[in-house]
Length: 477
Image 1: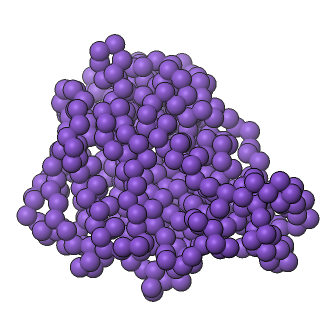
Image 2 (image 1 turned 90 degrees about the vertical axis):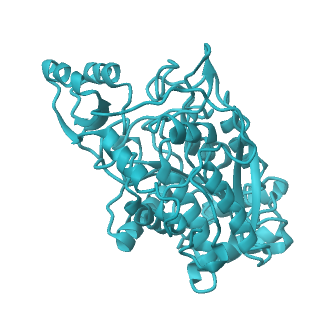
Image 3 (image 1 turned 180 degrees about the vertical axis):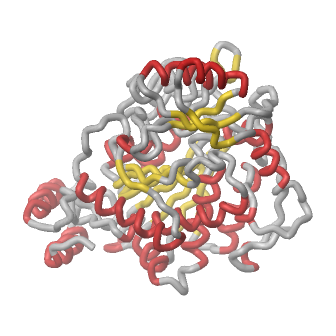
């Protein structure tokens, strides 16, 4: 039996099984892979030729680009490949000496099924997270609704939950404005799954004692999809810990598609994805060729008013704004900068962790990503958060860092949503005459959700009352 860090109402039993879930879908057939002796090196590529050589040698670029503004990148390599780097004159330093040792330590930390362990004391597999959603729904009836957004290639349920307080929406709207958090597009990034569930749990468990949680749940509906890539996640638990993509079969072999290169905005650019199915950034045969991205995007489009989203990843400790596929700044960059910098500061104040805010210039170009689509297709304030760490453990964080990383994410997420200035329609950090003109245009059309503040999908008299109050105050929070 496992105890919960959030009180007896959330206590439940679960096992660290490798089952794909309650319906036992078809499994991906992949051989077990050992990473014994393999290293992660931090390199300083001098040019595109160096990067091409590193990609050929490694095939697994861990952070996919420069760390901060240093021009460095992390690659997993076999020890016998290090002399090739030496001969090429590529500067590097070993930051992880033996990847398999890290994985072994991770597994050993979760191996005792009889240990009295809270949910957030260890990483959880698909079945355990699935059960936890049910536990939240049972513990908070009327607050938590289980959802299914679709199925994966191997027919696993892409599940999640909707969370809000019983306080009714403004103006009799059927739903409140929606904030959408999803995790684990990349299967090996286990910490992102824990973060999604922690934010949901914290909002619920602190509602009665924390004014921020109360304000957020009274104002918004939060949607959490903790395992966006369930087939890949299962592979990472059962056979290949460092598997990244989904379970797409190509030419009779499970090669996978990088679902975070499969969204339509910016899709197809070789500068931020690959057309080769052997690449970890393979974008698929077409935008939304994968059922996982189809399911997530269809759900987002079904929401009357989506106002914000975060796509959680690891690692590098970054908060990233659109666009990720190009260096051109997005419309409303001023508002993105205000919110992003506030998130970074909130993390530092809460946990002392150092994150950096910016665009692709602080990480890398990535085309066909979820946040670019969420921003481009729905207008939501959409961000990526790259969680801990900065390279000591990479994707294989020790369990001791689960809670600190979750606390980073909670501070960032709540700061983002409380910082939304929804009446600032042109996102210049002021609610002024320019916003009035935009609102008036939406109000005249009525059926558009461009000026929808209540969450009902249309711009009507209730929205006019909301906008008028914001217009009188002039300045964003």
